[in-house]
Length: 255
Image 1 (cartoon, helix red, strand yellow):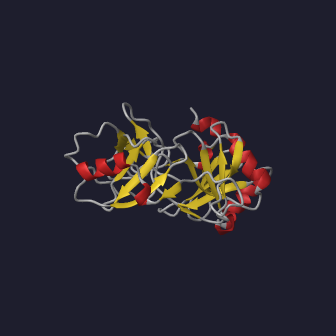
Image 2 (image 1 turned 120 degrees about the vertical axis):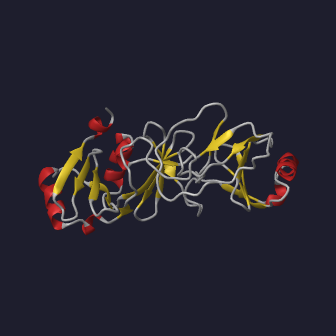
Image 3 (image 1 turned 180 degrees about the vertical axis):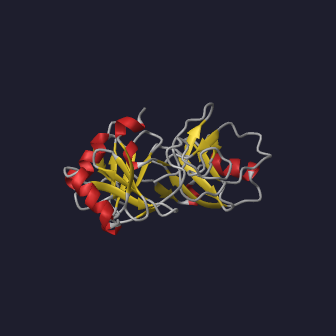
């Protein structure tokens, strides 16, 4: 799925994490009228609509969520532990499966032959980025055309070839080259794990305290602690040995 979002006059804020690289913007490009920010902004599983959590828990009880993103059109893209990708609308209603194999509706982007790009796009790049070549191009599912140059600069055009903005890495919210959760809830990127990898003490605590809930996401943070998200959106934290530290419900995170 795409990783760029267009903003012409205002900056929208989304949570983002993972590895970062800054895209190179041509400082001499006086025609640049917009700024592009990421589209697929990663969000904590606990921040997903409850309808999404309920759907996954009911229909995929043996799987966990390993990645969750919100797209520029407000849709949520959920990647499960078996690599299935589910698409939900902004309210959490299930829309379909993103599958490039043709078995399901495809909610992804369509790669374009560079030779078929509109003359207006090719002319813009030739004038403003004369020393760079086009690495790849794609038609995003919102109808915009995303062009990546060989220095990783990303340019966004509308369907008519009009320039809209320059891309910024999807994981670098403020463009400073560093990654962070912008909402302050998470200050570190953890590694996804299978719930069976949690310490026995943590598993016992979850079974006794939340017997009617299932684990939708589990990760080990870089400092060795564990974070678990349950099917009602509750986040439970444990230390490296599996001792309970704290729990935060969805209503708490919304305050």
